[in-house]
Image (cartoon, rainbow, N blue to C red; front, side, top):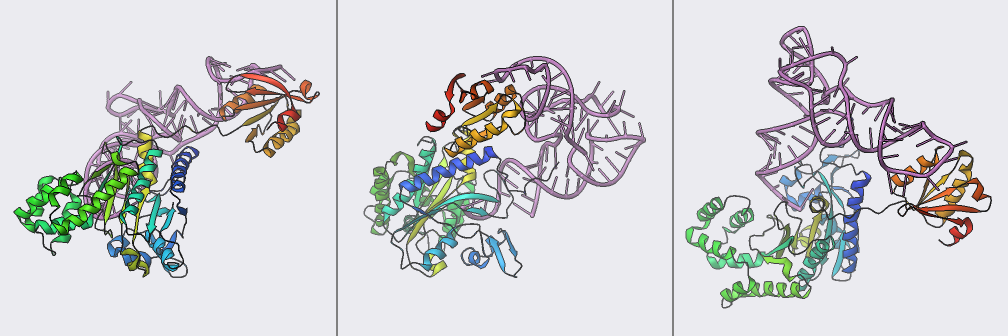
Length: 425
RNA sequence: GUGGCUGUAGCUCAAUCGGUUAGAGCACCGGUCUGUGGCACCGGGGGUUGCGGGUUCAAUUCCCGUCAGCCACCCCA
């Protein structure tokens, strides 16, 4: 058997390429509606660019090597550092808020599994320079609008939202100490991925049973109004609850109230997020997160030395593609050939070419048999190619300047002057 | 990186208990067809049974290794 693609890499045959193009078309179409501009950067970056943000554990998962100039380089595993560099370099000149998106191919050296390869295309959407919660609502609205455009409804896809500032305030109010916070976040992040009893046990050992019990009960809250009335008299929490309440209000105004649920256990790893965070899931729970993002107000400072608030999300093509395929939501590709030109015998090949050229001059997609074939065989090829019309050339008709145009879907045909046909296009 | 399952034609599968030249459908190419497509019939190309080693008179079949795929873990995008 022939050598295939490298593990975790994909060959895109025309059928797969069509799926990928469909997804990317939707991404670009929706982002244009939200007035975002597309950018890109290099697929290969200095290894150090990723060391700063991620530390050495992540470096182990990078597709990295030493180039011929003895530079340590890595295939980009994410877009954010590149984005941060680009924004930082022109921070003063850019009109704020910056509304940019990109569709980079990203790489990571990891064992592949469901919904996860060593390479994928990921839509990256970012807003820079706006700290108001309106920006958070606008951002999530984009992710949800994409899912709607792809054919999903609020019954099939849900966004779970949280806010790290709110979670922190609630934890503090429940009695968790500053020192315990990172460990508590780690346990909360793992809720749902490990048995509830184990999580509870870990939590008990970090903060004690009393605090742990209080944490358990507020994590279960899914209704912002309940949360709101429970904490309205506790200023250090109420401030953050109020922001979340507004977030829901704005999402309602943007038309996505049904798609969003509060879930304080959403932490988004232990990464760089500082505020509102969200993840999109299929409601059947078959796939990993479709998309994730949130606010990262300190990252541009860390990476680029520019203190600007920012927020963004990433959405990969692999999970989205699997989900679309399983829900039969990928539209059939349209026939790609407009005309198939067929001659009744070999002597007409030059005429076939000439007519094909005229049709192509009218921006039509045209094919014809490259070797002599019987007319029946040519028509069979035309159908197989998905052509919508065949143009049949016969000596008797050509003498009068006419050709036969056959509608391959209807099975009807008509005789028409060649010049008229061309000029009508 | 760890563990489990699976590898036969481009695809889906077959091959008795380990036994002759590894078969079939679909797809592809051609013929019947000097002619107007999807049908039918006939023919053709395509395989180091993932790869390597072992056991055996004999391995697609049993054993070991390896590679690849799937799934889960780790971790995250």
